[in-house]
Amino acid sequence: MSDYDAIIIGTGQSGPSLARRLVAAGLTVAIVERKFFGGTCVNTGCTPTKTLVASAYAAHLARRAGDYGVTIGGPVGVDMKAVKARKDAVAGASRRGVERSLETLEGCTVYQGHARFVAAKKVAVGDVVLEAERVFINVGGRASIPPIPGLDQVPYLTNSAMMDVDFLPPHLVILGGSYIGLEFAQIYRRFGSEVTLIELAPRLIPREDEDVSSAVAEFLMQEGIGVRVGSEVVGVEKQGNRIAVKVRSAGTVSQVVGTHVLVAIGRRPNTDDLGLDKAGIATDPRGYIEVDAQLRTNVPGIWAMGDCNGRGAFTHTSYNDFEIVVANILDNDRRRVSDRITAYALYTDPPLGRVGMTEAEVRKTGRPALISTMPMEAVSRAFEKGETKGFMKILADRDSQQILGASFLGLAGDEVIHCILDLMYAKAPYTVMQRAMHIHPTVAEFIPTMMGDLKPLQ
Image: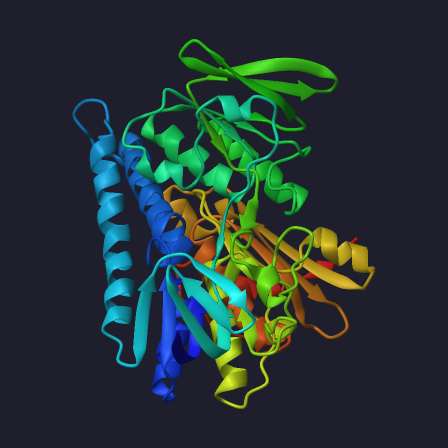
């Protein structure tokens, strides 16, 4: 038995930062990692995928060199082994950095192995039982594999398995038309694969407004990606060296035959093998650990952070979970999950930056609202760079003048959206930014203009 002041299970975005704060406060900490330090973001999520996005963008831009008056001798080629090596180097540096920082952190003991609760405040890692008055669960999530007939009989890829790909799939069939599926679709199309996207919903990324979904589908199809929406996958089978995906659409069954299949139909939490029942920790029907606004579970002294609590599936929400927990435990600052504003990005090219409510959500409230939109082709910086796809949209409350939400699909949309997000956190009326002088030529310079052009939402 080894006693500590705190046990942290998992080294994703929340865990290491929490360990450092707890140790700085004079507590002894045990942190447990069963596989790769850094969690999803560093190993199979943000860091490696955005590295792949960068390589794919370079290939795409090289093919467009003539548009800029630049001559390249011969066709543009992609060395997939070099692409993977670059991705591995970037992700590996981040992973090693997390591991090294924890192993050298005085007051923190690192345990490598699978952690399971044996009681409310006791966690077993192999033959060692750790005990502490405070336990923090930060175990992340993984790809959800749907019960599609025949899927278990064929080789398939997930976002994690894609990290091992060092070749060009001749025809990649992607099941799922949301964030993970769309990013990989564009990446591999730009590398040179034939790509087909299959989505059950009537449109891609159905949580977004229809104009956003349509615009994303349009630029993906312009790049040669096959998009099949309103299509239910009813079976998968091997056909020689290829894989046939059977699809039902409008009552008719057809098939898409490819060489590789990527399953990108949602995520599930890594909570099914933690022994949560031994600790009496409650989960919802999907396996997410139930927490309150301060991320406390139903068991006193146990918290859940990151993807496993169902309160967010992003690196930034996980880090914010850490900030909320520390604020309440160490800083006497009653921060809550309910205080944060929804914000995320889709890293296609062009990217989508999103904050707050969608237009559809605002309409459902029935509240008097204002809206302003601007096509990216009207933005001088986008026009100068030859990247004019997409648009910007801002929604505000008519009476309070508070910003309700925004969708920026276009050049630098994932960065420019923070102008709106910060204004929302400041709880300032949109007229504050309407009076701001932004720098020219930038994408953000048009936000004050859009604020001055807000009109009633019909």
